[in-house]
Structure formats: C-alpha cells, structure tokens
Length: 165
Image (cartoon, rainbow, N blue to C red; front, side, top):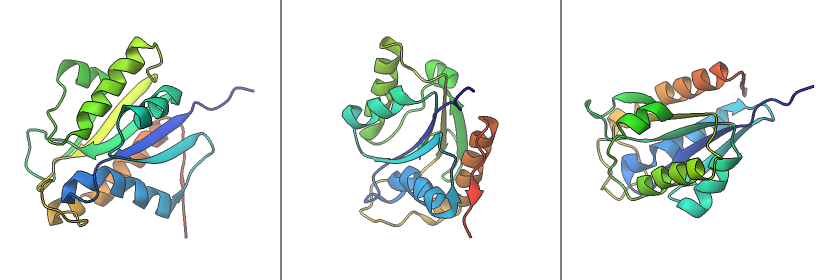
C-alpha cells in the first residue's frame, strides 16, 4: 500500500501588524474549523525565517502557503500562484519575511528537495504597517474565501478535511 503524499500548509505573517498576519489567521481558522487527514499538516509560520521554514518546505511532497501578497489588484484581491508563476513573476511583497520564504524555495531547489507542487494563496493587504492584531475590514471579509480556496487546493491534492461541529 502506498502512503498518501505529505501535504504541508503554512500560514506566514506577523499577526501584530494588521493584514501582515492574514496567512496565520487563515491557518488558525482552518485548524479551529476542520479536522485533517494524517498526511496533512498545518503550521503557523509566523515570521520565522529560513531555519524554521526550510525544514517544513523540504519535508513536504506538496506545499500550500497562505500569505499577504502585493499583487496588481485592489486591497482584498485574492490570488493563487504556483511555483511556475513565481519563477516567471515573483510578486513583490512588503514585509521582511517574504525574503526568507523565497530564499527557502531557492535553497530547497538547490538541495533537490523542492516539493512536487508549491501553491501560494494570498490576498492583497490594505494595511501592513499599523500595529494591530486585527485585520483590516477588506481583508477580514476575504478570510472565508481564503479558507475555501485552501480547502479546494487540498481537495485537488486528494485531501478531504472534515468540518468540526
């Protein structure tokens, strides 16, 4: 019997800086509202750098990252990028933690330990500078969309989380 591929979901961001923490907030909501198969692991990546992220990336067969991204749309715009998109047009990000994530992908590639698939799900932030643990209204309104998009991604990888009652 073959094992199910290991799926790692990481929420990245600083919850002390308003919309910067959206990735962590999505993972918190997923962990509170769903049970996951044994091959799916969720992590609060916070603002951890290479030493925290690299092992999580390298152990994954499939990686889903949730984060704030500075895309071309209006604040609250939701995005889905694949690794191929990153290689062509890496979106510019506003905070310091993005450098760690991009560098981790590059190191994993050099180490020949890049996951088979890498997907980044993100939302354009409205405010990443205010010291607040609250998301802006337009980003908070997108939390359910980000959760649904993450669940859809997991489903496409063969994982079926169960809602908690």
